Image (cartoon, rainbow over all chains, first blue to last red; front, side, top):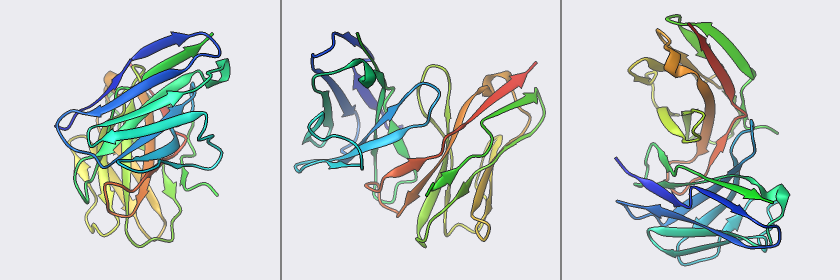
Length: 116
Length: 116
């Protein structure tokens, strides 16, 4: 089946630093990928839609200057948390659809971010 | 307004019993898809079952079946013969549209505990 990977799986950083998370579709091309954030014991909240070759579309309330998204190729999207603060600590998950009219989104394994 | 409503924050079920997880949705679109995902403690999102809005038959995948009642806008997940490994968070989700680039919105989830 389709596989989506994320790197790193876990990251701990100091407050004020920036963290980059990569999302790769390993065996298919994805013109669109999605980034979600999940706080403990809560649901997945869609942050933004990452579009290959164009600007990301952010959901209401998500700071685009805080969460930079780059979809440089058909298999790679990156999320950069800039000037991270402890409240940015969360589980970040990406997903991608494989085919037009696909019945499923394929999710990456997630990245746990802890900002000290 | 909430698009996906899961009214059961937590459930306890005896092993081998069947369990129904409730989900109602809100959309004005004619074309949409409904999903159920399982999220164990590891955090990965595991696709369980999909129902398209035009599908006349209820979807089934092994021990999982989706009780789709379009007029009531409900899409309950039924797990037959529950197993200890079924203990996890379960999310109902909806995609408005048919394309792989259409975003998926998640409900708040139900935490299922299977008792030995």
